[in-house]
Amino acid sequence: MTDVLDLAKRLIAAPSVTPATGAVFDALEAMLIPLGFVVHRFSRGEGAAGTDEAPVENLFAIREGGGRHLAFAGHLDVVPPGEGWASGAFEPEIRGDLLYGRGAVDMKGAIACMVAAVADIPADAGTISFIITGDEEGPALHGTRALIDFMEEAGHQPDLCLVGEPTSVNRLGDMMKIGRRGSVNMWLSAKGTQGHVAYPHLADNPIPRLVAAMADLEALRLDEGTDWFQPSNLEITDIEVGNPAHNVIPGEARARLSIRFNDLHSGASLSEKVTAICAKHQVDVNPVISGEPFLTPPGEFSAMVSAAVEAETGIAPEASTTGGTSDARFLRAVCPVIEFGLVNATMHKRDEAVAVADLAVLARVYARIARAALHN
Image (tube, rainbow, N blue to C red):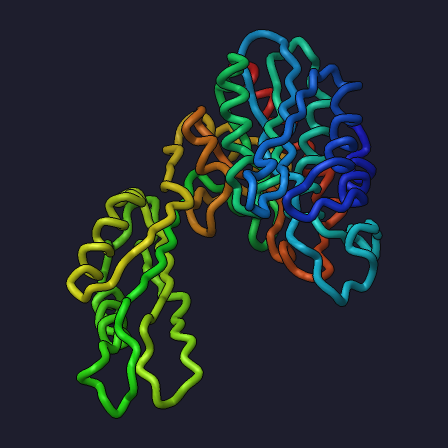
């Protein structure tokens, strides 16, 4: 099998803070072309006039071998590394049994494992593709969604998709994601009339109305959860008035909330519910839906993943829908999708690191999944 550690180092060594472009995609392309892949690269989101939108690079690579089509999906962009690393964030370094570097876990390490796995699969075994974006950690507006559009236009339809997000918790193989909750963020605004606190009859204080609306929202119990999803939760994440004067009634009060929701709801239904409650208090709502919930019910695909994981690690992964969102929320519209990857303990942290041994094991797991997916 291709040296997965070397592949991971090459990807980590290319700085790629979101939105990623350039060198890191050059590195991945150089890995895939010798394996027989046709690589397509394109950018989206160059930004309209007056915006600060940066371009996002995407890569779709395919090796057509007929038969079934398995897609590997992931992202090359990473969150900013911050300060205080023991070694350079983009200078991969092995200390002890760990490989350090931003993206080692989330998720350049997993992409290296995908490449190593494919190198071990005969080209005539079936069709394999890579769906790789540079905009998963950012707004995710011009990444995987643009790739899906590209695939549809080109007539590429995967049968199954495996996303390499770091799903393992305590040890490699203990968890896979068969679904994710949806996410919607909402900005609340109560308008009033500014005035002097000594003359309240000449003003309209918006704060009590905003507080009353938030109290009603906080009292909501959206559901009790389902067989595969935990209960939906609404969290107030910010309150802002911005009033520096002690003797002035403000003219506006604002708040923000976030809802993570299961498949008993949709982003639209929750937006309508919150808007109706806030309307009673004359509070405006601006909702932005980040993604809808999805579930790949346990079946043939999850059994493939579980069997491959157990064969290489000795444990059967728990099928879970916990955690935040991922680009699987977009890919689920294309074909059944499951997420499985490295241990997530250090993702987004200073001194992010992956166990060197886990890289080799994950590459073998991915190879087993690919063989099974293409054979069926």
